[in-house]
Length: 261
Image (cartoon, rainbow, N blue to C red; front, top):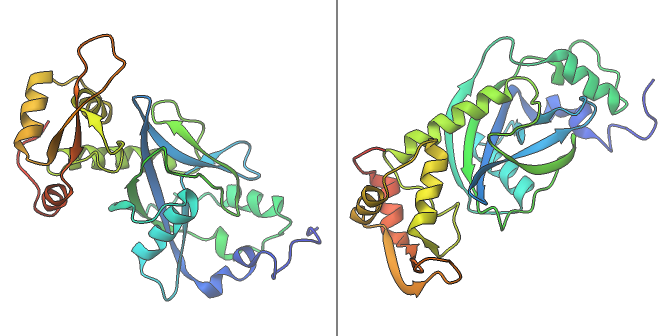
């Protein structure tokens, strides 16, 4: 029996989404952050799914570009604009959608779906990854979730459908980016030390890098500006602070550079 307060007017996503959105197409966003030397990922706790978590995602309006839909998801979940965003993979396996899980979510919201309900159909999803400043993001749940929180990438809760695979593919894509483009501007504070930048790279790559080789290579790229400031409060000699030369950084994003890790 339907919940009396759930109507087509109050919950149009569930009732007439098939009229507004492109059928069978969605976007899923892996939103990375970096905090306390941990690679973080933003997840949603989905309603009526036995504590299952999911990647922030959404549907594509019939008159909307796919990338615009991804930007809308990111802005809605983090409150941030101008986010670094990359498309990395298309997930189109026949069995990736979980009809029974979606049915349970609908029933939990007072909707008794018929078999051809648009949310019970097969969905192909386009994966995007985004890099955001952990300290500036304001996580917010969507209309199908109860919470939106950061999780350590290496200590994740149970995920719905194929979202664990999407996460792993996103990490692989991020590692590939490290071999041809810079990373850091969107994940670190404006000012940072060379050890902090190295720890970011090591965390993403999952391996230890030689300190001298790392510093030599990063300086050779010409994307860093050393400041006449040092990080205070440490037990050892205070390291210099750096910041990214944004003109050179964005040029490197466009043109790439050689040499991997």
